[in-house]
Amino acid sequence: MTARLLDGKAIASEIREELAKDVAAFTQCSGVTPCLAAILVGDDPASDVYVRNKRRACEKTGVDSQLHRLPVETKEDELLALIGALNTAASVHGILVQLPLPKQIDETRVLDAVHALKDVDSFHPENVGLVSQGRPRFLPCTPHGCMQILHRSGIEASGKHAVVVGRSEIVGKPLASMLVQRNSHLGPTAANATVTVCHSRTANLAEITRQADILVAAIGQAKFITADMVKPGATVIDVGINRTEEGLVGDVDFDAVKKIAGTITPVPGGVGPLTIAMLLANTLTAAKLQNA
Ligand code: GUN
Image 1: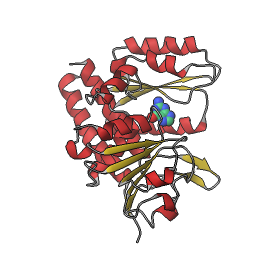
Image 2: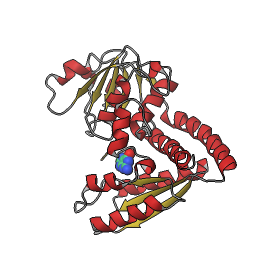
Image 3: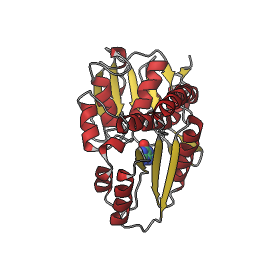
């Protein structure tokens, strides 16, 4: 048996089409075009690709975009000054600081400096708190993308055992928090999971992952999840994007796991495209909040 493939590209394109209509309606009635400002410090090639894809997706959806490129030797205060200026710019609704940042810059200080109403990544402590309390202002993009893939593919989370491998602030922690809520903007079936979060110090990891009805791999290590770690018929969501000699590969050993799983996301073409679609959704939300 081979697992059903979940086509993230197709789902992202469907969401972008819906968003383009919502953006057009908002712009027509308010006279405001949502605008996303991205800040890229240094010349990390992967970040370059992300930022280029973001810009293209903005264009397709009717969202304005700005790109602020700063050299790799930029000082923290210079970056904070730019964020301060964007925080007060009425024409900018969303601010995204592309990660990773160069070593001389304190990431937490910088992310905390983004105005909470313009924080389209949902990294600000106020927005993290709201997500954790189940009353989100902005949903974090990659976890929200995972929820959309599940929901739009007819896979319910309610009552299932979801095992999230990885406890990052960007994916693992917020996704676990979203899965365990009583309700969600996608309804109670896209919530109410029994959630286990695993990490590098988890004992008997495979024993736990084998109990997962929904297994999310967000570790950042190529092909970390092997076939023996997966329950037959499980849904496997691969959040990993690892650059290897054989090209882009996920955190799941795809060729082996697809023979065991019931449903699986590929890499590339799985969760990745959803992250940008959800970023655009947050930019529209930000523009609405700032023009209420
Ligand atoms: N770098 C990799 N993923 C992300 C993301 O979701 N947001 C930001 N700001 N930077 C990233």
